[in-house]
Length: 225
Image (cartoon, rainbow, N blue to C red; front, side):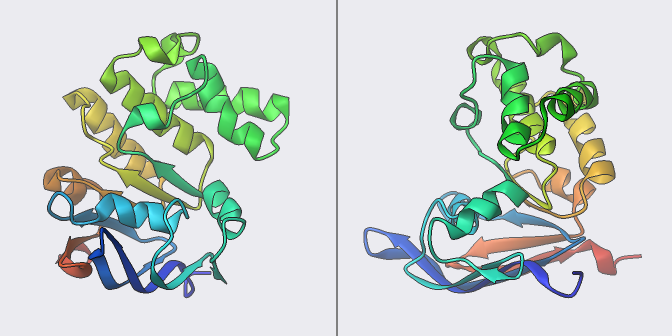
């Protein structure tokens, strides 16, 4: 598994209003890699995550996820079960009446038993220190709490790879540090989009930059020391 990329994008083209924002972009992410992605606003970072998960379809290029080429909507159903996406806007991720139901939704969708799901909710609530929020309606949460709950729903799926869009945005310092600890101890493979280079340096081995429609290596910490 280690020598086959989890995510492989080849010559991806995509744009809006006939203007390309991704132009012959190629990217490979292997099992065990922790990668950060930076770039100017509007450079296509979020768009890239949506293309990987099939929410947007490229004009051209080849998408191979988990060793299979993905073209149609049905091809991406497995991708969304095994690749965990954190949306930049937590309100786009949260739709269940309570926090407990939010965390349970993904595992139930994966056909876990009610007993298994109950254990997952309990474990995730303890991991994220959100036991006190479990019965809270999601619309009554603060922006920072919503971000944490959205992250918790991704972790509850136990994905093969995490795609996280600005995960530290809006978090206080203590919660930010807790997230770093979780990413360093629980997550093996991830692609993290962030403007926060300091946060990235603490959790990834490589940082890429997206500019002019393509991806370039920005920093490689795995070669240091």
